[in-house]
Structure formats: structure tokens, C-alpha cells
Length: 284
Image 1 (cartoon, rainbow, N blue to C red):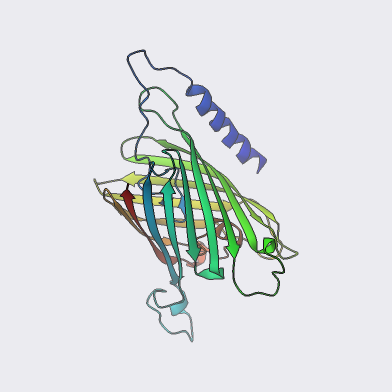
Image 2: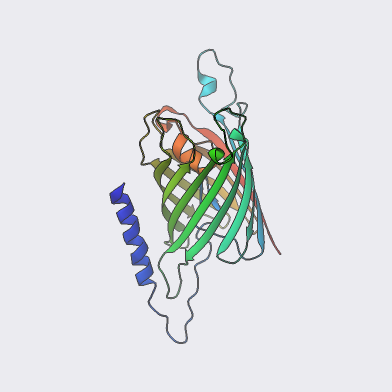
């Protein structure tokens, strides 16, 4: 864990220092655009933020495990499509060109969340930083009826992430991130704070279509069960105001701290699910 965070810190400060190179007098710093097409990259968020006064509505849907219907004495559920599913509805708004706020509700555990994202550094096409750096945070309340929750604060959990990204070419974009998930109340064999790291890539092979790849891996070890990495890959179709992603993934909680702490699906055993994300943007 220390090695990973040391590497992340090195790249962060390298990007900041390199970003101090001033452009020529007749040349302004031009921010890089569309490193990623949407606010999310499958299960994780991207480094992108909304423009000022822009509104985004999103639907994130995860079906059941594709392999459940192939097990003995199980009904065939058409690759998990007929199995119990999870869904999140979200609404985000750009306060400035760098800062956005959002709210959301998720079916599993009846989670209601508030999220925020701030673009710290922008990659420049002429001068400026070679990297984009974004901070993302989310607080969620578990509203499920459960006697273990005695107070309001015991239902709360939080997620913090530092994301670094670079648009390598016009077609290829990559990002890495370090995350911490905090739960105010956990079982005795779980940790209140859980660390993880993230990698994502996007390759645009046509004006409207891209291939997405994502990998989230836990660093913190729990004694209650083994948290599994989340592997996801899919296809994204984007237009000026819409984005549609369809993919296979191993984590189904959607809310980040639950995906990075409680995922037990193992992609090596075929424990994956079909999912899709849909978003629609408006400019006011």
C-alpha cells in the first residue's frame, strides 16, 4: 500500500511541477477536452466534471450474475437478466467549470447519497500540466431497516478518491486513482477504513464509439471475507448530449465504498454481470 501511494504522490507532484512551464507570451494554455466521454467509467467515476450550469441525469443498472442460471437445480435466467438487479438514479449539476455536486439513490441497501467532484489540475494541449488531477467524494446513508443501526451517524459511509488522468492520443486515455472508503459502523471483523486503487482506460475507435476497461483492487485485508477486485470491460456510445455504456463487471453495489469493500464476486470463476449506464446532459 505504501509503495502504491508513494508512486501516486510522485506522479502527482511531477505533474504539478511540469505544469509550471509557462506558455509563450502569444500563446494561452488550452485545456485538454474529452479525456473521457462521461462522468463515469463503468463502475468508477472519471476525472471529468460538468461545465458550469450543466445538468446530468444518469441511470446505472446491474443485472444478476451471468453464471447463476447454469448451476444445477437453478432456473435459467437468461445470463442474469431475469435475476434480482440493482439500480442507481443520479442527478449532477455543474457549480463551476471545475466543481460539481450530485445526489443519487440506489436500490440495494436503500442508499441515498451526496457526491462532489473538483478538478484540481487540467491537462493542457499547449503548455500547462501533462496530467489532469481530480478529487472525488461521496457520502451515503444506508436506509435499510436493520436493528444494528442505532443512530443516524451509524448509517453513514464515505468515499474519497484522488484521480490522475492523461489523454495520451486523440483516441487513447488512461487514469489511475487511490481511494479510501470509510464506514461509521462495521462488523467486528471488518475495517472502518478500507484502501483501494483503480485503473481505467478508454480507446475511441470511431467518432461515437469507444472500448472501456476498468480494474479496481482492494488494498486493505478484512478477516470476515476476502474482498475481490472488480474487473469490468465494455462498449461506450456517445453523442453530444447522451452517453450509453454496456459492459460486463464483477461488482454490483454501484456506490463506490460498497464496491471497493464488500465485493465478493470472482471474475476467474465467471461471477460477472451484465450492466449498463445511461446519461443525458443539458446546458442552461
